[in-house]
Image (tube, rainbow, N blue to C red; front, side, top):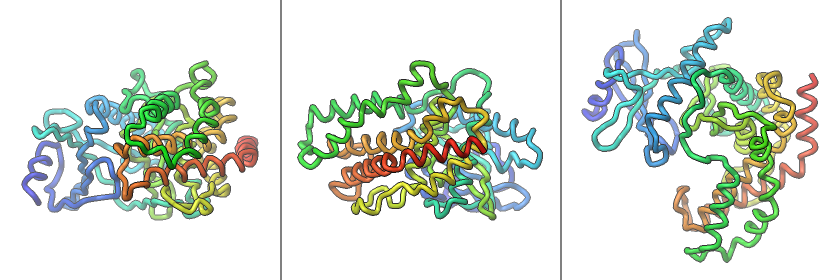
Amino acid sequence: MKTKFKQILDQFEIKGEPAKIEPYGTGHINDTYQVINSNTKYPDYLLQRINNQIFKDIPGLMDNIKRVTEHLRNKLDDIPGSEPEREALSLIPTKSGSWFYYETNNSYWRLYHFIKNHRSYDIVENPAQAYEGGRMFGKFIALLSDVPGGPLNETIPAFHDINKRLDTFYQTLESNSKKRTGKTKPEIDFVRSHGTEMGRILRLGQNGKIPERITHNDTKFNNVLLDQNDKGLCVIDLDTVMTGYVHYDFGDSIRTSANTAAEDEKDLSKVKMDINLFEGYAKGFLKETKNALTQTEIDNLAFSAKLMPFIIGLRFLTDYIDGDNYFKTAYPDHNLVRARTQFRLVDSAEEQFSRMEDIVRRICSE
């Protein structure tokens, strides 16, 4: 094992002796490693360097994760048959009692217990998997409905705030400093024609019609660990857990899980929202949440399947016009292709909107 990693691990209250460390997972934000223990009586660990270019308030972020994971384990303790140590992440403290270690080269590290015998998938293959994803993210919201201690810290300010995203877009469009609007007239027109409608969820919240909740805010399917039987086990990647609206989680799951094509598919005829995967996800999500959500929240779940691809498409388009400063790109028009794919998903959701609303109503009446 490299001396650097050994020095970092020595800062934490670990059991056993690390024998090997190797890169783990496919995440793009944090650097993640599995720490394999030489003594099989003790657990393996998951070591992460936290990206402090994206997350500016590391103490606040780690306070969120500590509060959320501790609350989840306490709630799971009261559910017969639960395994709290496998169904919720567990942080390992440093020897000084902190939940992260700051290295002098401006690196921040944290350590979790590694959850063994799990699976994860980047792509949802069938409605049964979609159901498990929905059930796990729904359970996550339900269990966190009564976290004590006041609001969580905002780890990325205005992350899903449509008004802020639109303001940034129009400012970028007006400056057009990179002279990249020549190919984007259809996409700009799309934003202009949809912008007011897409403020619905934020307006409902601001007017007190829907409550703020603790939400995950990055509900990709690969942020759910499944057991060996493909049953939901644990929700991971908690850096963006903060206060939000339930529609952000539901809509972003549909955006990523029910899309029939890759996020950067150039052939838009292949891009569609799969209504069967939508139904599978909605069944799982509402199994855990329908008794906790308000009627107005439920009435707007289908709408969120339009909102979230619009927000992400807007971000891709803004970044393209601004010269590709945020999202990593593989070729010059990559962000424009991504924006077109997301806006096609919005169109597909609009085409199937009445069916989605019917599905939500039917599930809630069962």
